[in-house]
Every structure is written in C-alpha cells, then in structure tokens.
Amino acid sequence: MNHGAGVMSDKNKGADGPDDATERELIDMEFQSMVEGLSLDESAPTSYLDELDNFVDENRFVAPNPPAKSIKQTFQAAIASLKKWKNGKAFRDDDGVAL
Image (cartoon, rainbow, N blue to C red; front, side):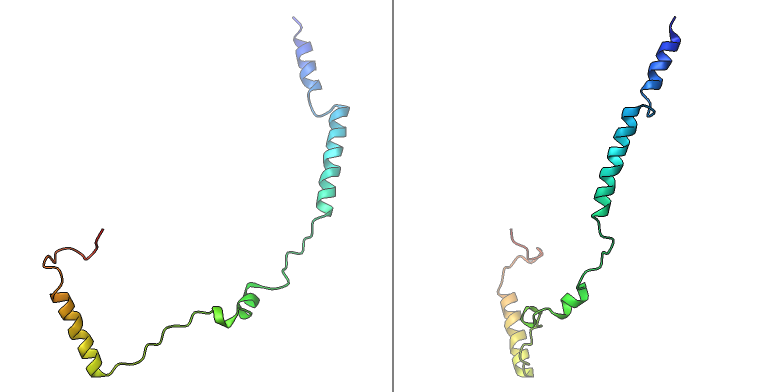
C-alpha cells in the first residue's frame, strides 16, 4: 500500500522542478526577443483618403452622357419599340427570360 509514492511522483511532475524553471526562463527570453523587435507604431505613411485623392483621373468612372433627343426622335423610338414588341413572339405569358 504505497499510496504516498504515487502522490510523490505526481508532485515531481509539477512546475517546481529545476528543468521546468530553466525551460520557463528560455521561453521568457525568446518571448522578450520577439517583443523587442515589434514596433507599436501602426500608423501608415499614407491613409486611404490620400490614396483616393491621388487616384488617376483616367481610372475614374465617367457617367455616360447621351445626346438629347428631340420630341420627334423620342416619339419615333417609342413607336419602333412598340412595333418590335407587337411583332415579337405571340406567347406573352413568360417573363422574357430564355434559357
């Protein structure tokens, strides 16, 4: 009935051993060396707004500006659209989508 021996071996597995202390020191030293190389300054030399200001004008969207039509031209285009629709398919219950 060596119950005490089992408890003793569990105690040796804890973080109190000399090897564990050395390992912790090595981990701490490695962590410190990594942290020393980091910079806490996260500012960038330019901001997103600066980049938008410097955007090349030829890459900007230019809205189309079709020439204005006279009333006669608008009326003729409307009639042509109605004729095209009337002379189209006879079955008009579909939504116009073709697969």
